[in-house]
Every structure is written in C-alpha cells, then in structure tokens.
Image (cartoon, rainbow, N blue to C red; front, side, top):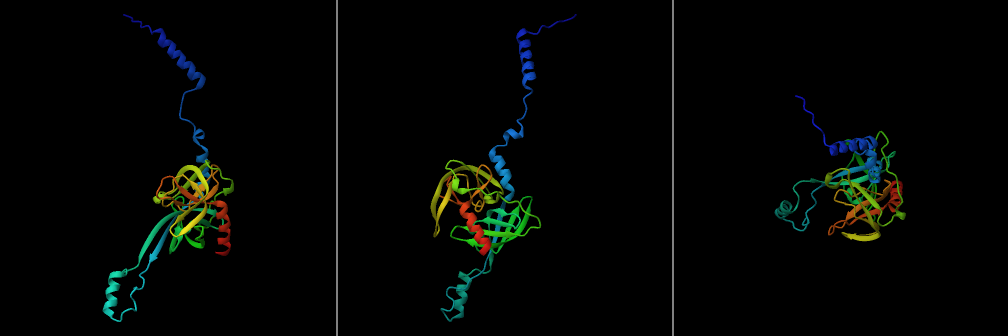
Length: 264
C-alpha cells in the first residue's frame, strides 16, 4: 500500500522563505577578525612589544648597632647585637614595568621608585626573554629613571605622543605588570590634567589623572592614547579610592629622559 503525506502549505512557505534569505545573504557565521579589531586592539598591538616587566632585587645588610660605642661592656654590646640587629643579610624583591624608548641603544624608561636602591635589575621582554639592566640616571623629583639593557639585536621601541594636547574624556590605555601578571591591559579615560598629589614626603605636580586601572606593578608602564602613542608614564594610585591613578606627562618625561641619558 502506498502512503502519500502532504506537507502543510505554511511549512513549505517557511522553507522557501529560508532558502531565499540564505541565497540572498549567505549563511551566518562568526564575525571576521577585522570587525572585532577595535582601535584599542590596534593600539595594544602597536605598543605592546615595547612594554617590559622589571624585577629588582635589593640586598639588605646588617647595620651597626645604634648603641655601638656607648658602653664599654662587651656583654652589653653582644646583647643588643643579638636582639636588635639582623643576624644575616637578606634580599627584597619587587616588580614594576617599563617601556623601551630607544630600541637601538637599549634605553628603558621607568619610575625612580621601581629601581631605587636595587642591587640587581632584570628586564623581561616577550617570549620569556630576560636581560640584566643597569641604571643610567634617576630623577627623584619626577619619579623617573632610565635603565639600559644590552641586546645583540635592536629592540622594539614605542611611538611617542604629545601630552600637551590631551583631552579630558579621551580614551586612555595602560599596559603593565600588576601583581606579576605581565602585559595586563586596562582601558579608561583621561580624567583630569595638571593634577598635584602628595605621597610620602614628596609632592608631585602637573600629572595626568586617569581611571584606567593601575595596580602595584603597573608603575613605570605606559599610558597610551587611542593611536597607541605614549602619552604618559604611570606612577601612582590613590589608595583610598578606586579609579584614580596618575601618570607623568610624556612631554615632561621626554625632556628629563634626554638629560638623564646625556648627563646621568
């Protein structure tokens, strides 16, 4: 016995419509990468290779007793030496970031507080490549420092921007090494210009304020504009609030960098 099943007309109409739409527009698929490559992605691609991680070691040696020479009794001296002085030297380690400003000569710009008192400085490039660095010069008043690495091949360097024409509200991109998480990218805006703030016993003037997330380890890393150009060196966060970070304008940093390279 032959059976003939009739397909309802509404279903046939729906199938015909689907075939027509598919023929007209093609089958939907994943969006091409070019559609997802935003200006931020392009900026990070351009600047990322010139961003480095900086790790430092500081050897702390036992100092003289504050009571040395105040008492002639050797037992008295030994008592205070045993209880108030470190028994042996120890090493402190810290992390920071930097940016290569001259790839041919190996000059890296970072913060003064990243390398101050360091007895060993290691610069980590991409692909697990590390180089030892030496301090060229430091400027505590602006929290800037230049270190130098020796590489057999030229290193990538970053494109310089202009911090004098920054606009409040424009996109700001930070790249750094927060908590050892290398090449972390955060995005925000330029929140304010010409800011002054105090940290410790120093007051810093004419800084960029941004809400791009800056954490310990970001210090010395770049603040970029939407074109991937260096417009600031991240240096500090306001610990009592979220979304308040500061960066040294690159026009000021560029002048100081030239002096540090020339005169140390």
